[in-house]
Amino acid sequence: MEALQTRQLVIDIPGRANGSPLDLTVEAGQTWGVLGPNGAGKTTLLHTLAGLRPPRQGEVRLGERSLSALRRRIVAQRLGLVFQDRQDGFPATVLETALIGRHPWLSPWQMEGGDDLALAEQALEALDVAHLSDRLVNTLSGGERQRVAIATILTQNPDIWLLDEPTNHLDLHHQVAVLRLLEDQAKSGKVVFMCLHDLNLAARWCDHLLLLFPNGEACWGPAEQMLMPSVLERLYNQKLITVEADGAPVFVPVRS
Ligand SMILES: Nc1ncnc2c1ncn2[C@@H]1O[C@H](COP(=O)(O)OP(=O)(O)OP(=O)(O)O)[C@@H](O)[C@H]1O
Image 1 (cartoon, rainbow, N blue to C red):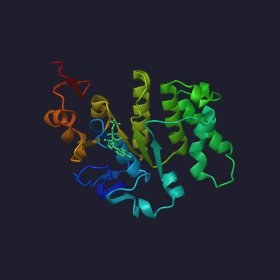
Image 2: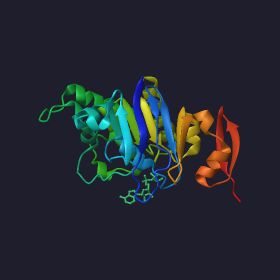
Image 3: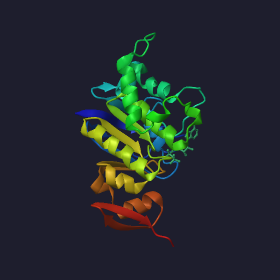
Image 4: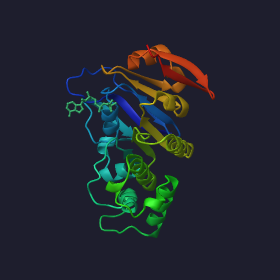
């Protein structure tokens, strides 16, 4: 099933040429990683896919429909976004924050019910932040906040997960725990589409990759076809050594 599609999509980065229009077909059950250097447009792409920024050209489609033709509430039910940076200025607790994930599913003045509460509590448990339920989010550490943000999307339970650097701020154990959770989501038929700075995590956990170059050029496809050392060196402007460990390629930057 084609869950997410882009047709001749050009993201709108001021002053940049159109580059390669994106014709992506992302199917249910797939895990995509978006790789590229700083400023390549990864965040802009995720925001465009979420309908938060208009594209310069082309369209995003959710299933059979154009994203721009769908009501915001329907989009919010089908698609969840974990932002790279969050302003948690609003004094909400961890549990209240997770419950925001239920809002797309409630009518305007409807309060969350027992089922919503149970979903939020399960999500906080899954992200190992249940013990922080009553804490204000603006008192949490960076990694704890990141896990609460992911728990909020788990509570939302969309078909399409868009994540901007989901492993940011996370220690090694929690990086793997989050990637396993995303793997389980994909196995259950969801789409996982995430920007990653860690090439090795992408090589290990993604089945498809999109490489975004700073000039707007792009290529995409099955991960094993995209993980070509010469292309990755050009992408990051960095010489790499490739080794294999635990069944996956590992890319190490050359020191000198
Ligand atoms: N409102 C804006 N006005 C001008 N330029 C912008 C605007 N928003 C983004 N840009 C530029 O668009 C480019 C892409 O930004 P974006 O945040 O999408 O990159 P990124 O690949 O996510 O980078 P990073 O790896 O650093 O997070 C950057 O050069 C950024 O400076």
